[in-house]
Every structure is written in structure tokens, then in C-alpha cells.
Image (tube, rainbow, N blue to C red; front, top):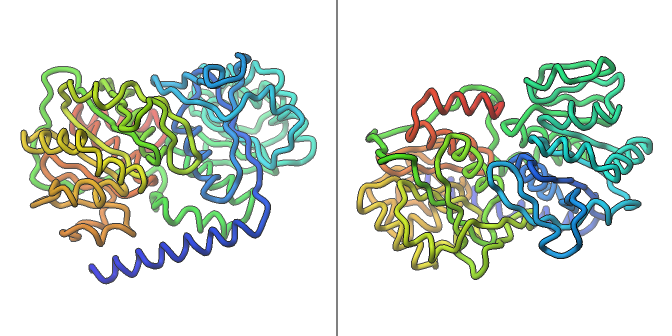
Length: 422
């Protein structure tokens, strides 16, 4: 198995090189992802991340009319997530895009709807026959309100289907493509939505190329499964206190799934920067995320769980951050839960002895770095107080598995359905 995993790692590096050469040979497609106060962060991040992986030049732009500068670009998305946009929609009027993709969330979709500049841009974009799309509440609240789904098949968040105007042909499906419009249902369908956009913007071959390293679920909408060994109860004295460290290069889909899902469940999630500033730049899109506090401050607190997102450079930063490593060792030594996804099991937990005597999984091209690779083919593995997972495409399952351990199966299934994951 070790040699097989090593060969897979070499193949993955070759794929990245060939992709880089191919991307350099052609002009990048331009994609606009508008955001607003109350935007669903998982939907915005997944759309930006996946399209960036395809080679698109993605601009995340706020509809807010505040003055320029970082303060004017700050977006307070749903579930307490703070983002810094690349630009303001008002400053992009007149620029040409190959795709405009609207994330959902409430009141994010309403705030997008009420932006007259954005409405004008999307309508002019559509008149040219260009590709556009929306997910969650945005198809019904935004696009339908603008009259941009007339005579088209479309879907949206299930409880918003009744808000479609009579001119729309509603379809209860996870993703719907009709002519130059792509619509989808919610955060649990966000990667599927983004991959559908990639296929429409490029082709099926590109979509499959991008989908591979994400390790998406083979059966979308199916019930998630967990491989658990040495089952123990994860005890908390009250509301679960969870630390999610972030670094420059952290994977945004993984980080935001953890934050979003765990806060939906009612956990108190602290996002702590291991960098010199609260603002960190994530792996793919250069998505700018604002942490709640610095790690030095978080280190003074007690946590029921410490869980790390992946992203290679982010994981490498975690591994050389002594204060974080000390926290993880203290957590593990006291029998408290800790976990990691993607690159972090291989680049943080393994080299610091935090997988000793434990079963784990990791990002497949890096799984050969684990001493025990016997369960690496599983999407989520729990071994006592340790939980690990594989990739962006397993991030929601990873977060739901944590909810299940802390709050119970019923709570986790309820969130999975709210997420439109199941």
C-alpha cells in the first residue's frame, strides 16, 4: 500500500505541473462572486475555490457602498464569519466577466437583490448570452426577483421553492442547468454547483480534472458514514468550546465548513490566527478571512476540541508554530478530542507524534507520510479522541462527524438536512 500511495503522490505532482503549464498558455476566464452581509460563507468559498482550481481569475466583490480600503471591503457573512473582499461591485461596473455566480444565505441574498449596480451588471451579462448562476436562496430571492429565470428550469433552497415566481419552472434537484443558467440548493451542494459551473465555463474534461483532487462524494445526497474505532464519549462541561486555528495557506472550504457547521450546531467556535495578523489569506482563491483572535490569546483558554483545516502551506505553518503544537500535545495527553483534515494529519500530527498508536486518514497524495496507512481510504476516521479526514470534498462529513460526537446523531442529521447535504 505504501508504494501505491507514493506513486499516487508523484502522479499528483505531475498533474499539478501539467495543469500549471496549460493554464499559462491560455487567458484566464474572469469570474465575479458578489458577496454581502449575511452571505453563506461555505457557498462563497466553494464557488471561488473550485473555479480558481479550474484556472479562472476570480474576483470576490462586496455590494456594500462603503469607501475603499480594507475597512470598506470587510464583509460580515453568516455565522459570524468575517471576510475581506477583493473589490466593490460598484467599482466593477462596465467590466466584462465570463461568469457571475451568486452565493446564497439570508439576508445575503436580499442584500445582493437590492444592489442596483449588480442587477444592471447581471442583466447586461445575461443579454450577451454569458453564463450566470445562483445557489441557495439567491435563485428565488435574487434572480427570480430580477426576472432572470423566466421560462427556465431552476432550483433553490427547498424552503424557498414557493418563492419562485410563476414564470419559473421549479425543479427539486441538487443542481439544475438550463441554457446559460446554473442553479443549486444550498451549502451542502456548493461543490457540485461550482463543478457544474466549471463544466459549463470550460468542458467536462476540465470539470473532472478539478473534481479529482477534491475527493467529492460518489453518491451526492446519500447519508454520510464514519469509520470509528475505540469509541469513547467526547465529554464537555457545557457548550462545546472549539479552537479552529488558521494560517496563510489554509484551505478555505475546509476551514469554513468547520466554522459554519459547528456554529450551526451551537458550539462556541474560536478561530485563531497563527500568523502576525488577524487577517489570513487562504490557499486557493487568496480568500481573505478574519480570525476572531490571535493564537497567543486563544492559548490562555481551555478547549474541548482543537481541530485544524488543511492546505499544505497552512499545515506547514501549523507544524512549526510551537504554541499550537504544545496545545495539541496537551490536548491529546489529557485525553481531550483533537483532529485534522487534508494535509494537516500528515504534516502536523504525524511528525509531532500525535498519531502514535492511532488510526487516521489524510489527503490521499500525502497519505504515504503516515506510519499507519491501513485506514487511509476512509473519508472520516475516528479513533478514540482523534478525528481525521481527507480533503475539501470530505469537509462537510468531517464537520458533521464532530457534531455527532459532541451533540449526538440526531443533531448531526438535522444539520446535514439543513445544509442540503443529505
